[in-house]
Length: 316
Image (cartoon, rainbow, N blue to C red; front, side, top):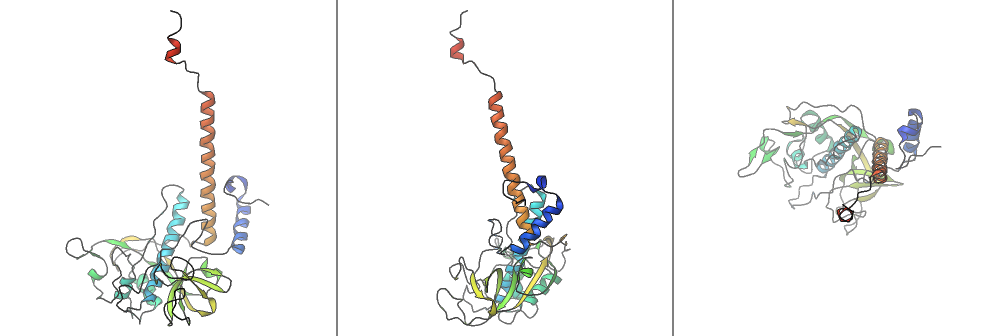
């Protein structure tokens, strides 16, 4: 009947088997939402695929980049929590523009999520500091993969490369979402108004949560839109068609097609991160209590100091 709270350290109160049963029970009860894992938002902010208004309909590239970037961050968060020291990682915003430039069958409207994931598996992907969104297709050369425009624009020789170990089709259910967000094609029939998706066509979105008959996703139409908040939308699950998931590698420095991908030791799950974050908070509160107790003990043991004014009145 032991329950884990922010003030209790399960390592000292429960054996491994009871701890495992606790985690499995939470897995069955959990309402998965990657925007709120023990108070932490583990997904990237919504971007705008419709700006700068060149008509490049590349929601597939944004969905793939967003889903993969979120899974990179989730894996990095797990590694940081296991180390138990140092700062938490920063989020990786992967480049949709590089996918448009270089993914097989790419371009704007004719691309697919699996094209982007195949590119990341074979060659790798880059973040937005290498190739920001321009809203059109450019040649797939070194300058249009990673560029530095400090002064004149030059191709960068070495940069962070984000790889994919495996990818494949996913079902839209809790089992798939436990490994991280999934990139899905959404059929939309809503009219264009302030709260609905601003298109009547099918589009792609990174799905981050499931609530009943609805899926919560980020189609990257800007933070100023959305019937949820901050650019997120709630879609009927019946409107969500094919979905894709991917297992990222550890980011490494190199060049696209030349970097050596470092594989993750094991997959990260929603329940694992919940448990690790609870343990982190438990340890923080325990150390805080210890410091308070040591301060109180130090105050009790400190000697009485006679002031200089009092000593000057003593007889000589």
